[in-house]
Every structure is written in C-alpha cells, then in structure tokens.
Image 1: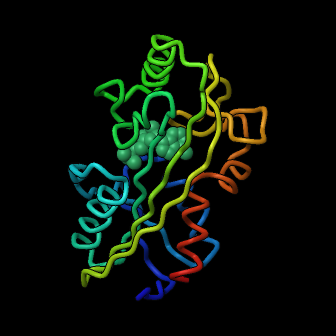
Image 2: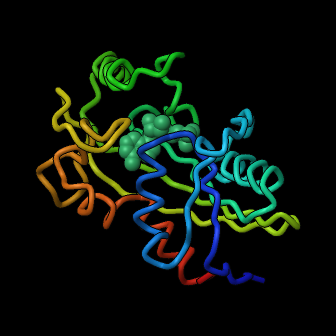
Length: 199
Ligand code: IMP
C-alpha cells in the first residue's frame, strides 16, 4: 500500500550535484524542502546491488536512518543496446575512479566501434526510491530512449548528456535548456509515477 509523502523536509540521498538540481526542480514547487546528503555530510553507502532499484533503496534507506526524515534517492544509468545493456548499474564508474565522464563516454564509443555496431540506440533509466525512517519503502522506474552521437555536444546537464540524443530530437541532452531536459528525462518519467502514488 502506498503511503502519502507529506510536504516538509525531504533528504535527497545523493552527492551528485546534477541530480540534486533536478530533484530540487521537481520537488520544491510542491512545497518540499530538499536537503542533499552532501549538505548534511552524510556518508555515501556502497552500491552493492545489481539492479537500479536495489541500489536506490540502499541510498534512500541509509539517509532516512541517518536523519530521521524521509529520504529520496535516484539510481540511474545508461543502457546501450549493442553492449547488452552496459554500462547499466556501472554507469557512474565506467571509466574507473576518479569519475571522468569524458573518458566514460569515450569508452562507450570505443566499445561500439570495436564491435562495429550499427545500432546506436540507448536508454537512460532512473529508479527513484523513497524510504521513511520507520522502514516503509517505495520505488518508481522511468526510462527515456534515444541514440548515441559522437563527438560530445553541449555544455549543459551532466554525466553522459553530451552524447545522448533523445528520441524525436536532433540535439543532445546537454544542448537542451535544463527545464526542457527536466521535463522529459528518465527522472521526470519516474517522478510522474511517484507523484501519482505518493503525493
Ligand atoms: P548513480 O545513480 O549514482 O550510480 O550514477 C548514475 C550515473 O549515470 C551518473 O553518474 C551519470 O553518469 C549517469 N546518469 C544518470 N542520469 C543521467 C542524466 O540525466 N544525464 C547524464 N548522465 C546521467
């Protein structure tokens, strides 16, 4: 049974500034005070699961326990069809640590070239998880399909945005104004489902 999320303090269980900005854009107009895990100096738990849902729950659970407030997390990534869905849950560290998204985008491109892939389709997946301090939890999944382009284009957004052209568009996510991206992103799709269930 879904539980309603009452407007008030909501912990964004992420240290990723791009995600925090997107989550603030989505939740603050609805009366939530979004405070990020980075602002609260919370530890980043290890993401040990093999699914987006599992890893999103690890992050939300840990932030809700540490703060005593409901926490929201996003676990997301890029699934490339010709690479069998990789990098998937490994998207954030695809080129190793420290994270360098230019190197990660280049690695995806190199792997597509190595198999002479004609299919350049890919999708971004987002799983939003909400955890309450008493242990109640819910997850919502959103996806956006598109194709990969090379070289990277655009200065906005974050992560793999400069190589991702969403279906029905000619420009990359990084060439769209943030509001345009936020209206159609995988996170927005997951957020619409969350809104219907929890708000
Ligand atoms: P995680 O959810 O923290 O494991 O990281 C997901 C990774 O996927 C991020 O670090 C980004 O590289 C990538 N990613 C997720 N959402 C987006 C997006 O909207 N644009 C570009 N890259 C994204």
